[in-house]
Image 1 (cartoon, helix red, strand yellow):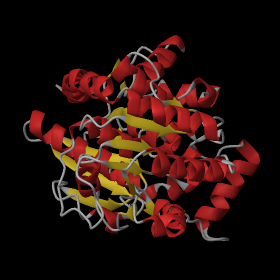
Image 2: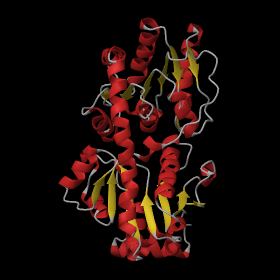
Image 3: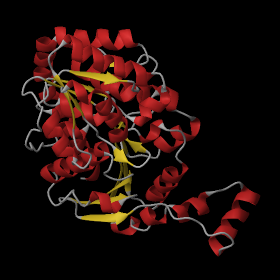
Image 4: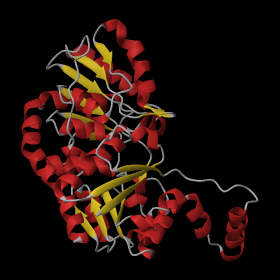
Length: 386
């Protein structure tokens, strides 16, 4: 069986890397003879994932003005309000592999949370027109993200694998019959433990991840996170380890975190992890932290899966759903509008410290079941293609 993963922006987002890396591992572990290929918008960033059977350029192509394709696309849109031809040319780098593949996996987790995706809709239509299997792999989608156009696209899928119960229930409520519940594959990802940096306190280091994405959606959160860092330094004797997890141009956690590092380095109790580690190396550091505070979902998954008490900053249905599946409630997940409230941030941190042992015990109970749910995705995929 030949599987093509697509809708992947590249592995400078270590969460995207974690999805591809862990998905490839569990598919190959459980499906004999499976070949896994990746279409990536930045294929050069994915060479670190050595178990892939091939990495292809999945970037969008531009239509050159006044070219044949541009003229035909313009006429189709003008007279028939149809952009299918244009989209097929823009997404040609992914569509051209259709004849060679058996299954197309739309990956990325929360890709459907960011408005309409006409390019992916076009790929999905063409996958089905060729009679190939189409799977939405480990997704999270909020009620607020749904539209009629998106729902019509979702009906095309042979299988939709929701990675948490909030998405699963919402999609079922929309009348979709092709939805199964699983968990994010990254819960199963291995870790690599590098040498600890100078200033790290073994058993007493607090990881902090923050992102430009969250910062830009709530500008006042910059000051409240600064207050939180001050609070940690004044109420504990812990080291704070600033932990980037996405290092793309224009969306680089390291740039945001380095400003905090510069501000607090004179305390002698802050360190910053480098910006060139891969997903398993970041997980190796996160696994050895006492607490973790994170804005990037897969950084928090790295913490949860190693039983590290975790507080989530300013995220959507995916973080709420993952926490609910782990704890039975949306434990220590602060919404985007809440993270500008310094008092709420500090109170949540204090709650995490106070309940440290209870939270860790709960994770030790729930993580093995969550990992089994990660593997359920492969079972459902195998059932589909058998």
